[in-house]
Length: 395
Image (cartoon, rainbow, N blue to C red; front, side):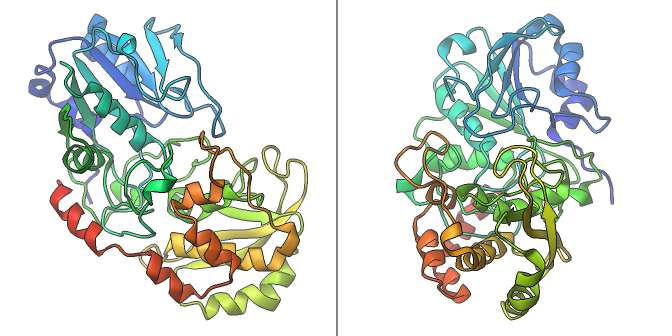
């Protein structure tokens, strides 16, 4: 299978395309903004545009992707090598100011998304599009793969009441779009004021591909997604950010494991989880009992018992359903030791973090009331969304 060429790769390979961009250039990027030879987009932009490359912007976790947690903001600074401003769009503002945008003719976005609603980069993009509506600034999205494929849809649609910076638009948990397609969907479905948007498409990417199929190098797009495999468990494991269970932050396997100091993993697995998992109808994964010691964040310095989610068949694995299933079982097992995390979460002070993450309070009630797995079908109503995305897809 030929290697996928990202939007960045296409730009770097096409001299005629480069000639289109005559004015001053800005770049929104992060650690994973690399070409297929591992060179960083900012370095290539310096070579390509010289003194016309005037500003860098970074999303959550920073331009360097070195900031660990939610609601930990990055500062603005002048980069010591590029000698141009680096503006943080996860700072006192999520939207670029008029001053930040001053002098920009072409604003490029090169961000690796993970294909999940609860990931902020697509909202940094859509807020930028809204800010640039009506301005004489061209927005160019350098498209990248959806690492968990561009076909499968999963999870509930965000309810408007639970909007936040990890859920601004009516998307399911697995939205099935590339970041370029999210930009197109925003312009067609979610805004009245249009920006001057252009998407530089990939070559050789097919919707059924997972990241491992692209032959592209994986570089972590956020500090706790060091492996491409983690992107596939993320739509389920991210739910545990709304609890006081550990989702593995502070370990070498974040967002692939879950646990708590009160769990004895072998006994719970042998006496209960093994059988109920087998009878659940969920497939494509294995739970492995583990103990782990977080070095920071939840339960830092305390031994936790829990489980690693090993994906055995990507095509049948349903991460969102698996995450909800584990949440229900661990809630029931831990009893009073189970706690929902208290607000705030992503600057929302009104709702429980689990409800912000789920985009609904119905799933929390489903867990608390020990409802059946079949009832998840009533939350996962995706026919209308599936029809909408057919109009959006460019691959």
